[in-house]
Image 1 (tube, rainbow over the protein chains, first blue to last red):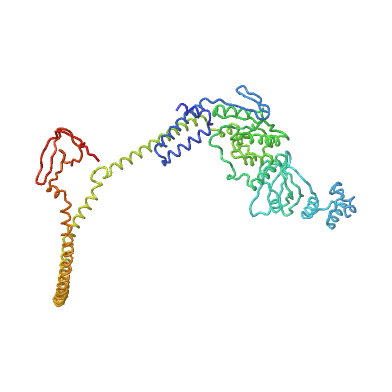
Image 2: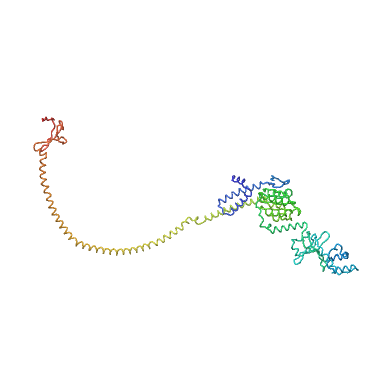
Length: 83
Length: 504
């Protein structure tokens, strides 16, 4: 499990994770799976959920300027300027 | 020409400025002139109105004013309206056939430019300005142009709801196309930071005012479209109608409509509605509202995740419950309840078969018996017949044999007795010759026998082993020897062996 989660952390974007989670839920709710597969999917779903929860609770806004010069505001945090 | 001719007199009545203009109806004018030349002359109302009408209707001008009141009633041949400025008001009409050529919707206070001429309705003494063409003036003109463009783009289908791209159900990255200086960009950043801190923001700063704005905005949209963002925000803070004009630009509108990524607009304040808003995939009233619409609130997202978790859990437990029920259902089947269930069918069949068999065997035996009886009878009759045939043939054979045998036997007897006599005859002759030669040979044999010599005094000496002794070398002193004489044996012992000297 620990390994599995590690792999998820690195490889999956939030969106991919959500999409996979959604498809897992759909297939679970569809009820066509073998019980063994259901259990596997459930496990995968739970670890995905954990990763996704961590991602949004730890998130900090990232701002990238692609064009123009952004006049900073007192509360802004600008990471980098590309052009 | 007539004007010139009556110029000096006309100047008094109608004013010099109009002196060069033709007045048309000569008769009436002449009458008036005559009257003025002489004592003051009184005109009829009709004459005066006619005079005025002739003058007024010749004036062809363009006038600009604010629409103060208007009436456009179905069934009427013209629309009626009044334009005014600070000091004056001018009642106007425009024939509907003319009005239809211009896409103008009257609004209180709108500035219009109309071109046409005066007309006087003599029967009521009412003066109107008859507009032959109309267009919006000032901002009104601007709005007209925008309205026309909106109409054009709508006809092209750029505002069809079906064309609008759905927003992604989850937004990772947002590109904000706006001024890098105004309040709007910070409204967006603050809103996203507060509600959706997980969203990565690309700021695409472009000038949003002035002549360069439309091109710059298009360029900014290009940059945003080519980034890996999920949604584009096209926003601008509030401003005057003219300030927002770049967002009514055709180029910008087409760019927004053609963008491959969903575009959310938030331009100006609530009541402002630009063409970019109309062709965007989602129109929000302000930059903040656009930012809110672009990404899910992190709290909502978190709630969704919790919901997903419970959906998943429910799905799994209902799956397990379903399987449990199935197992329960299966295990309650008679097969698993009654151990004999599987055998019951077979047992029943066995019983049935046994019964059938029990019935079948006696029937079979009876029918076999019958068949046997039949066969036996057939066989018996067949046997008797065969036997009779054979014994008849045997009888006749025996008779034939009985007849043949005695003659065959007597023949054989005769041949046999003949042969016997012949054999006897031959046999007796064979023995005669043998008897004679035997007698001769016997006499000679007797002569030759050593035993016959013994009778004449000769003896034969044997050693103890029965060997005939013929030399002194065969015996030694004290050997037992036996001497055969004619009528018996003499046992002796050797006393001495002496060689006989025989002189020759």
